[in-house]
Length: 449
Image (cartoon, rainbow, N blue to C red; front, side, top):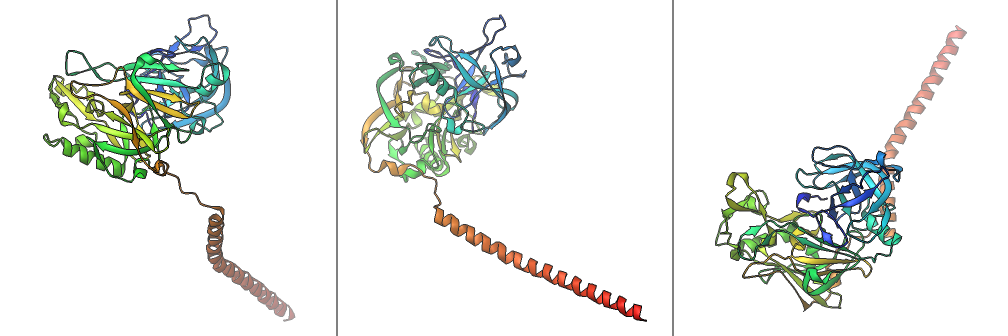
């Protein structure tokens, strides 16, 4: 799994705060409480911080200085699609700056070794997994941070994210860097979105799994079986940069986007995320690229709602040293082998509400959403759909009778292989007995002589 291009994901300062601060981990040394910048990740469930010197870390968690740290004497290892880390589990007291005046005893993984996890210039020293216990490492007995927060305080079981990615200045059409945003713990901030919030049910509490019922490119339906969109799951994941799609869906979407933008030709490597495309500053032809719409299951039976993202979201600005005078972009829709991942490419257009108490996720147009003079990100509905539950992917279950049949077949196969071996052993033992009897008889004859 991810980071998964984590350098572009937000760091954390919570209650209502810009996403460029940190969590405070308290320890009794007489020094000011240290602040650690933390990557907010709704696609994992471990709270982990750097706990050893690293070239890309400005600060790290020093357990030996904390009088409140408790060692759980258990190791933990977490691999991602890109990068991995391992460390030691413990608990400590955690406070949230600019938030509710609470201190929480939380599970913390002290990262002692890592490979391609921390990223130079990312300005974060750890990761805060906000998903459910089922996917926590080393197992689901480890209580995630947000669960601890809700249990130990009166904070409601809800949080919301406003991720502000590359935006547009009011008087210019070129992209300007404005990465940041806000996280609200325990509620919703009306000033961070416009219009209404539309909710989709959380299908299963592990990742934040949802059901996609349709996908359109410039209003044209891809006309695929809706199960393909959710094979083998669809999740909302702030720790992933791209919109990641299952192989068949990715191929169909890219074909449709290519057709819509065919007035210009792009190298094949661009569509694979391997090459950049560049234009002179301020001349990016946004209008040739289509909008992309995803329909999500609604809360009302047979109704869905549509979220629409712009090319300014799925073409991510990248600084290319060789062409520093140009605006260069990377295609941020990629192929997935683990289902659909609605990463920052999706979330940067919207204010996203993780209403864990009511098992639903809400989307509204963000107050800092990407837009130009022609188009804007949008959330609208309702749209009628039947049998939306059938769109969810179910892992094939093998019933008990089938398992018993398989067990008997395997036992029979083993018996067939073992029978010749048993016969060979039996023959060998018989041969040895006959040989010994023959030798004893020969000895007796020699004595008679």
